[in-house]
Length: 282
Image (cartoon, rainbow, N blue to C red):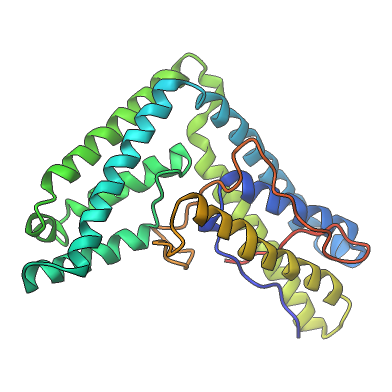
């Protein structure tokens, strides 16, 4: 029995997630059987995606200040420098002890899949959690072994600076709710996953081919996102050998933008008679 394939949402920017789900909605609403059988799931998905759209627009407006962009850029530089030190030590360390610490820290960094070009709130969330991990009993000795103490402190300081200028920027416009994008994004992803799971369940339980055309179209879109959109994101970050864990699990299940925030993903017309969007189930 056919089923909608999964995709790693952590490899997509929030604007791309929104468009991905929007296309899935268009396809679902155009499908006679899916639109009737999954009316509730489609409605939930639409509301969540509309909320995400609003939050993306608010964040984009907030990000127009030079101060925020420069502070974010500096945070990315500090992270990249520390990452490269760990990567270098993981390849060739002066001692076995340092080699073990470098390997352990490299696994941690890869699990987060942080990219300097991530959306501001994603980057803040990830760096915050990462520095907490690096300061914990589990990793603090490894940080000391590689003399990364100052780098971790610099990362914390720059994180706080970015958070500070972000709050200062949004304070004058409290209605913008910049900090809600993460929650909105996760709600939209969850709604989509529930929808995709229900489509798969119906196809399996009803043992019919009625859903095959819809599923095929969704899977074609998934393939497009994997081969074109995600690949483009990685190239834009200069990471053809992506440092990102391919699983969509905590702590690396956030996402990042692919085309620029004000651009749209040009998706192909995937099936005859359907305007469907790629399906993802993470």
